[in-house]
Image (tube, rainbow, N blue to C red; front, side):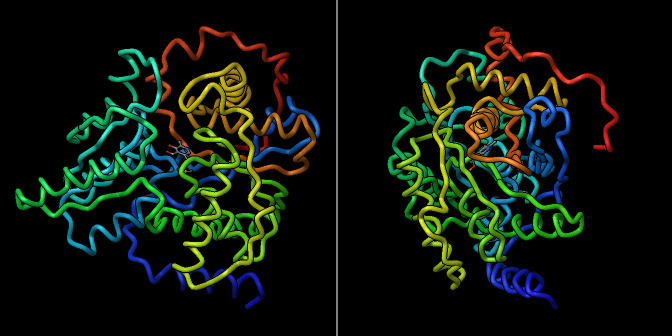
Length: 363
Ligand SMILES: Cc1ncc(COP(=O)(O)O)c(C=O)c1O
């Protein structure tokens, strides 16, 4: 076995200590974005299609749920509880996973985005969660993780008194980031795909929301000896607060896996350039990134996470902070497009002239 094989073997062995419930279509495709690369000029863009993880319209949360549901099944739970924003993808995929495993799902929707309209409250992920037959609850504020978790515990206690066996997927930072394990595994998947294609990636750009995806990828890549630079784009909070969050996740992962990949603070690269005016709220750069990616690649981003992340990627390329071979990690979320409706097209972004027809090398 060569050095990378030994590292992969070791990481997979450590992950095996955690119960896992297979839910995702894996491996997800790794594709070139040739027309978008031509449009930007001077860089080669690739996309890791975690929007194609399959279950319940897919997305990054499916990889994370494999580990939460692994634990829920081990504890013989029959009901799963989860909290998130009104257009949360996590709650939608959790409801889908619960159904797949024959469980009930209680979803708590928090008011994280100001001034939303009726479409936002009824379409997209909300509609899908209702089709899945999840029981919906509401929580009046959006920036109170401890309060939202406490409310879930109250609902859980009521369910327990009714004879159910509830399992809570927590929001706050006090718990082990089980979902990040799915992204340590995803780092193994990526390194295997790069090896098979003799492809080198210099920079990886990914959304950094709860931070489970970002921390898991960074931890996994370094554990495998890869020095790919990972930049997280913040859709939720400023870069300084997010830095502390990622540091916290990395510490917990080190303890959970009993392995220290020796990640330095400066390796936690973050930008909050596309955060304004706030979580779940559109800005021109986000709409531009969403329309440009669709019109160059036929690829849909979502308005809350991945379009903001692509806008961050464009900014980093423009500032020469990233170059050469860049991987955009698509984390899904497209159902939320329908909760935003015309706001995504009312602003006609200036896309410049798009590259003309090219002979692509396949998908
Ligand atoms: C589509 C999408 N992308 C990215 C994220 C952020 O992932 P993480 O919470 O692991 O940082 C989320 C979180 O809800 C999401 O729904």
